[in-house]
Length: 387
Image (cartoon, rainbow, N blue to C red; front, side, top):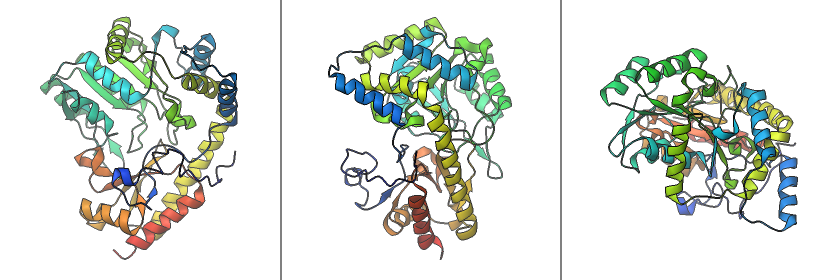
């Protein structure tokens, strides 16, 4: 696979490249925001999709035993999890699954806990369903984000929290939670009867440490739901396929009931095909991709230190989304946004989207050819080197 290939995605219904005007961004702003990659899917996935299209009948579809075997093998080999087929509830996406969990396991005006700055749909699925959002904000300590466990537990008790949405690995700050941190999360939630829904969509991208799937906590499986998907890993988000892992039968029934009420039923056939193919054949491609992304992260780190020392990279332990700290420039959010969009001609995700604790930061997607990433960094240098 040549990850240096420059692919023009304009005019392909691309949310990333074709929706500037619709999203009130300058027409020519180069997109480094949404979390999809500028790389083609693994060749075998494309072959399997072509084969299904060539068959010519695209009727209602359900996964078969081969699908569940591929899923089992992936999680057994990579995360030491022995899945059971009946744990798996398939949805069109993880955000959809988070919304279903909020509706299934809380009532209106209940409090749901998150850790800002966090992926902004966490807040949206809480507030849009008339629940109250409470955040135990992460603490930035020497360029390293940490959980304030005293605040975490106090807020659970004060607001009678019964549902906690965990982002693991964490988007956007790039933390890969240690076993010790997860132990404390699980212990606190177990003691206070809190259900954990863990979004682990970025678990295949770990640069430091090791991802621990929450299903490793066998003694607490009755209060854990793990949301997974191959779509970030293998870059087919539009095929809308997620595997939600729910060991507890009662929770699984409530979750499925909420999906039924939404009117959603059959899965996207192409999502089934792509997921099965990815988990059967995708690991060599993924290993090459991870090496390439490590090089891109190193490029950003070195470039900022040498050319833009006032802009600091929060060194990621996981994900291909980097969290940049612009606060030393002493700019307002409006000034920072305007300079990035209108002078640097780049479209990043404003940190304020991820909660108030994200103000002064920007999220940048580095899953693109290195030549383009270097050009984007040079645009930042031209814009900010005199400030």
